[in-house]
Each structure stands twice: as C-alpha cells, then as structure tokens.
Image (cartoon, rainbow, N blue to C red; front, top):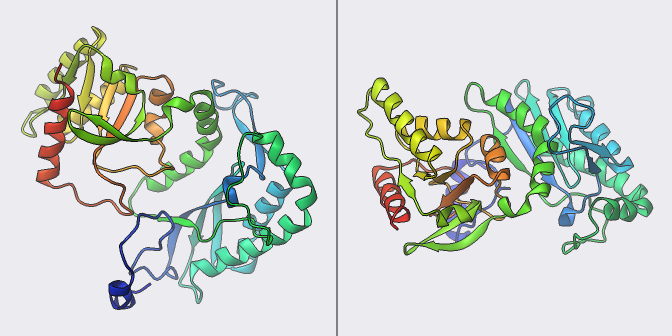
Length: 341
C-alpha cells in the first residue's frame, strides 16, 4: 500500500493492532529485493512433516534434528520450488518446511509487473489443490506428529494456509546469511523447544518491583539471592570495558545473576561474554513479545539450559521504534529495581 492510500484510509481503520501479517506501507513489492516469507497451516496443524532426530545431536550427524516430510509436505516443497517456473523474475533461494509452517527466501531479481503477493497467492492455490487431493490421509499424519494439538481454527473449505503471510525485507549486510542460518537451524530449534517447553513459553503480566513484563526463559533466575546490575558508561575505553567484563564474569562465576538491558557498548560486551561463558543472565529488551515470539537464534541454547531470562516491559510493535534516551533511562531504572533484595 502506498503512503497516500494509507493516509487516506487511516482515519477509518480504527485502533492499530499488532500483526505479523501486515505489508510494509510505502513499499511496492515489485522492485528488486530479497524477502524472507513465513506462512502457517490453518489451525497450526502439523500436516507437512514430522520432527525426527535428537536435539543434542551435532550439526551434520545422522541423528541431527530434521523434518521428514509427509506427502503433502513434499507437494508443498514442489509448489514452492516451482514459483520461478510461473514467475521467471522470482528466484527461490532457500526453503525450510516445518510440520505446521514454511519459511522461504525469495529473490525478486528485477522490477516485475506483479506484486509479490500474486506469486504467493499462486503458490497457495497449488498447495490447496494438493491438500484437497490428499485430505483422506492428512488426519493420520497430524495425529502422528502431535495428537495433543487441538484444531481450533479448522476450515472445511479446502484451504491449507492461514490468510495472508509474514514477510521481512532484506536491509543490511550480513542479514541474508543470518536468514540462511535461521532456516537451516529451524528443526533444531523445534527439537530444543519441545525438550524444554517451559523456557520457551511467553508469560504475560509478570509483575516485578511494580513493573509489568512479558517474559521468555527461566523465571527462577529472579529468585537468586544475588542479582547484579550491569551498567557501563558510553565513555569507557576498550581497556576499561575489558576490565569490567572480567569483573562481571568473576561475580557471575561466584553465583550472581547479572541483569542488563545491554544498551551501551560495554554492557553488550558483558552480555556476550556471559553468554559465551554459559553463565546466568537476565536481559531487559525494549522490544515487546506477542504470543508467537521466540528467543533469537543466539539465545536459544541459553534458554534451553535455563540460564537466560528475557523481560520486555513494553508491548509488541510491528516495527521496531527508535530507542530513545528516555527509554534507556527507564530500562536502567527497571534493571536497578530488579536487583533490589
């Protein structure tokens, strides 16, 4: 949607609600760009595959986590890889099919005549045909993957996917490689989450020292007798930062839980060192959570091992807002309050 159209309809849109499925205002979706696309099966039913392997198996081993695709999953893969046949300007760079959703990277190689959504719609049409033709065997596949899931959003009209889709538009250098790694690592992330579900469930309305947070991770870190605030001035030299890192690591090794918003360069260095040393940490993030939020790739193992807690004091937003000075001061105040005995 163009800005002019957005502004024209904005007064009649009502209250803005958080959504992972909204297109970026002002972006034409026809120009030469790379996109990370995510779409989910209706009702989150695990119709596309089954998780196999061991969460602790190293990458490349025969027992590493992987998804064994169902016949429908194979058809979905075929349809996705065939996008370029129907839309020659679009190249499929990567695909990961999970039991109940799909991640894929698409490269619009040149200015096109059609909105990217037209290609996604065509892909969904092909999937729906396969879904209807294979429907007699789908319930058995769903039960094998997870019989405890309730289908609360079942639609009987033959649509496989939920309406719309989520997209991320490639912006910075190095981001594409992170996307490739994210797709590659998805089966392992699912295996880890199933092995330790309590550390990956979003908790809302967690009140600490009078402030309400959303939380992901091990909440028992809040009960440790010693919680230390990490606060480093932006004016610290590299040598001073290195000394602070060593001091904080020594305290963490003696049993303290470090608490940090990781705003300044020094605080970020401490956070990286603590995670690398596999020591406990409570991290305050300015970016809120929604029901489907998960810890980032670099935090997964720390969450799985129960040594990490992420606290978000503010609601989820569709786009990250700039971090202001008042927000930084508020995060530091909350950090200090959490560390009070």
